[in-house]
Image (cartoon, rainbow, N blue to C red; front, side, top):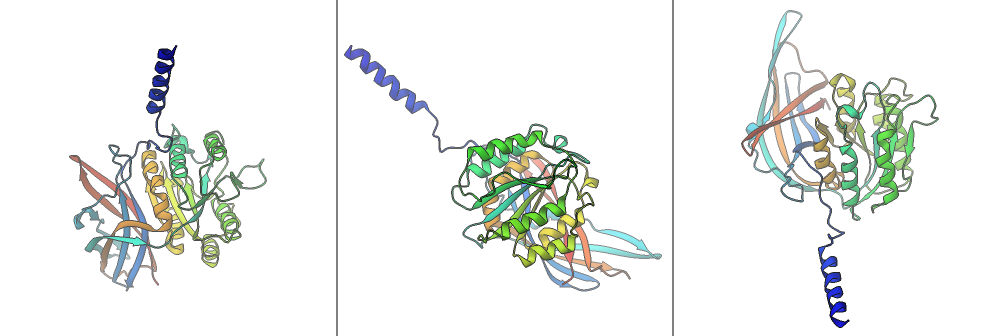
Length: 350
């Protein structure tokens, strides 16, 4: 009998020893992704514009259980497209020069408070075109489960449907700094709630009022976008930006799109640019896993990034407009593969 008890005790210890550590979270599959933290116009003349891009680049290294920075990129990694254009029979050449890039650190806030606002519209397209297997839920869960008191988050989703009274539905109306299983179950169910059109501006307006009323530290609205505003919103883009600035709420934009024509690039670039938020343009759902695992750092603006200084000149009679939309390509090698990403940006004359 004593021998049997001893064997049972040993087996029990072995069983406990073989159980995974409940505090260890295996990270979902990831890919590299750049994040535009900020754009700063240094000078804006009719024939020359100087500006600075703050760009974090996160590595989708699946051999480690962390999301590291991509360090050591040379100036040549950042490339713009120079071009000619003709107007009124006059030709103008637009040239870009990378004057300098450096890898720097920043630490702005000790905490954050964000309302995660998720686009659940189904027209013109839904998430099945870019995220058929619902990788975005893995991203939400990884972000939420690794929160651990770094900041507070509430989740909501939006769409415009004839049978629904309000365009925004709140999953948890109280901001939380710890993972809650009930919230995650509702986020998982969102895959069955796609439909209607994107009441984008109306939804962001309600989100601003919602988080501003809570009087939280470092407030922001982080929007996961699929489609452009449906044109039925009561508030204009300019008034939306003014409202966010008035309430000191930053607007962060995360894009996961398939067809470019379904998104208003100019509007979406103006929202983070004008309110101090960040912008992530993604072509793969696996990039979303990388972004969301680094989201606490981005929301606190506590991260390492590249500061890229650019001079843009116009050789010809046509000056730069007061608002200028462009984009930069990021090229680099990893494990003998040549990778690239495109980051859309907007420049506004001060």
